[in-house]
Length: 192
Image 1 (cartoon, rainbow, N blue to C red):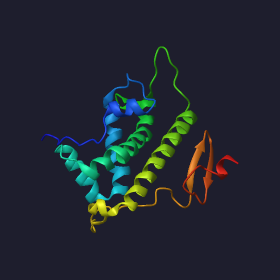
Image 2: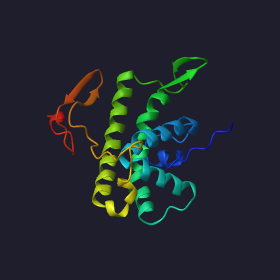
Image 3: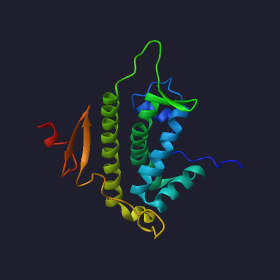
Image 4: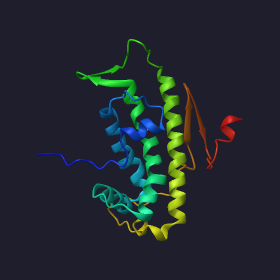
């Protein structure tokens, strides 16, 4: 049985252009992260109906107008940084013959687990920033995207709360800081 190809809203070239990922990184390491970024992170903010409409239009090469603006100006940035967040551990480690190993190279040295967590946190902060901007755009333009509010029982409804109101967690190495109330914008009390 052949698998149906997944519709990806960005590709490896987009990630390499807009992040710090080196051009020599294997695209096969990026595709699962892009898929997860779309399916797990993006879909919860678009809702199932709008998510499926965007994917169908991209697959059929029929995306135009407001949907194209949404895709190019908001969705792709969001997916890019969620993909980075998902991809980083797999750039650090790999599954090799049934075991997990840390990737190494002749001319480089692997980072520590704390450094990896800090880098992931930076990617998550960027992903949340772009997700919040996308959600704000959708909330201010709901009449342009009727699918944004047509989800039913067995579908994901559009979540508008990008920044959780309690227990938003950021790590700095082995130290963890939890801020009970997080407001959009910079992490005010975190840097005090």
